[in-house]
Length: 96
Image 1 (cartoon, rainbow, N blue to C red):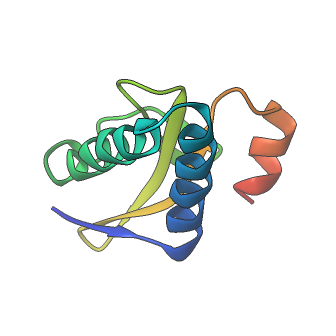
Image 2: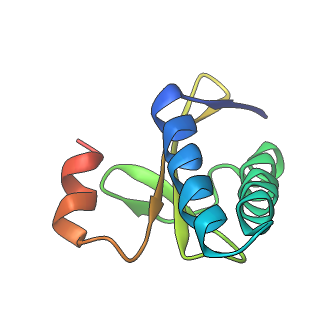
């Protein structure tokens, strides 16, 4: 399956990178490598994840982040990459 990362999700990844890069040298790069690995796994596993707020939700393997996506016409479109520590109400609003 093809995977498309929408602009909003790319901005989420950049925000996460900046946060982790401030925590320790090289951690931002590790964050991006890990999240891109999770996102790329959708080419094989898209659609098997539970639905939350109308999106499939893939939990990252190494960071407390969730990848929200929908499948449209054989393409897994990643809409958001959100820190799971956020307020659930904020997450719900963000996905509307």
